[in-house]
Image 1 (cartoon, rainbow over the protein chains, first blue to last red):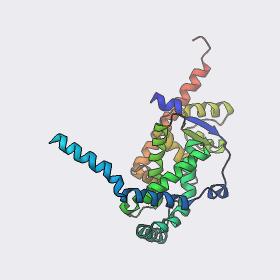
Image 2: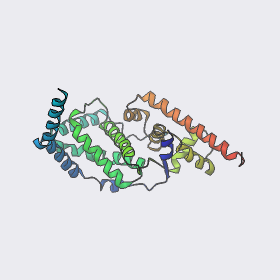
Image 3: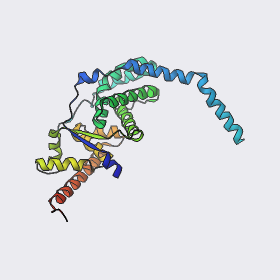
Image 4: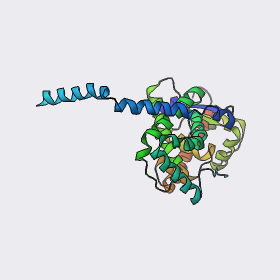
Length: 63
Length: 200
């Protein structure tokens, strides 16, 4: 509670951003690119290699 | 109080939005239309709470990225798509406050907006009262600040607040009144303390 109270900063009359300024920051292509990269990572068998080996090792240790 | 009506869409718009969601589930590239509709409101929501342009831009990107990654799990329940996006934004903001010690929770206020709060908690709009009210605001906890911020500074309806916070409209109203009475209590305490002579 005390931490919250200290952390809040009140800014009065902060410069208002226009819609044009905000729309300049739009970059859907970058989001789409990252999305495809993430999807590729999950599909890559190399990603599951270390995970699979760790699971098998854990299973072996427990049993 | 004048309420921002952008959130409240008619049935036709909701149906159009539903078809956009379905198309996005089929092909991620179709998500672009939803991104363009909601980018500004999500960006403003984050920027008002973080006060840093670059960070607000980064978090906004993460919000839309997460939405795109999870769009297949999204279930349409007759609510605007934005309520789901706001919930992701809220969670990402909290994560940012937890992970980055330098990130500070901010409240962005126009002095004009304070007038409505002062009217509702029945205090005169003097310079000293404004000063004390701003100090009292920073004494509230995050949840209380969030409610006052959404109602008074962003002019959201209780229905919208409820949908963003995943609570009922009535609960949003009750919680906002409680936050307001807490603010009034802090304010009165500050005024009493200010009147006390030094050394007491």
